[in-house]
Length: 195
Image (cartoon, rainbow, N blue to C red):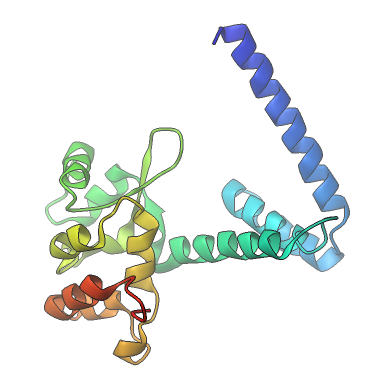
C-alpha cells in the first residue's frame, strides 16, 4: 500500500471512529457520562466503558451486542486486577535480581512467562506473574498445560475464583506454594464441568 493511501485510510478510520463515538455519547444519560469522564486518560478503559454503556441504547443492538460489551468490560476488569499490566521492562524490575527487558522477552518466547500483545507489536505482562522477586510458583509448569495461544485463558484461569477451591483462585494457591494443586487444576481447565 502506498504511503498516501495508507494516510487516507487512517484519516477515514479516525473520522469514522469520532463520528461513531459522538453518536454513542449523545445518547448516554448523565450518570453514564460521569463514569466515562472518570476514565479520561485511560483510552482503552474509556472505550470499553463507552461500548458497555451504549450497547443497550444503540438502535438495533442485539443480545449478542450487549453480551460482547459485557465481555469487554469483564476482560478489562480482569486485566486490571493484581497490579494490572506492565511492559517487559516494568516486569523485569519486579525480579530480584532485576531482569532486563530482553531477558523477560526471552522468557516469554520460552513460554516461561506470558504477555498480551497490544496490536502494535508490544507486549503487556500481567505483573502478578512475579511473586516475591521470582516467577510465580508453578507458572513455568502450568503455562504449557494451559496452552497460551490465547493469553486471556491464562488470565481467566489464574484470576477467576474456582469452586473446587471454595472461592479461592489458582493464583492464591500458587502464591501459597501449592504449585502441584494449581497444575492439576490447569490440566482440567476448560474441560466440561471444570469451570
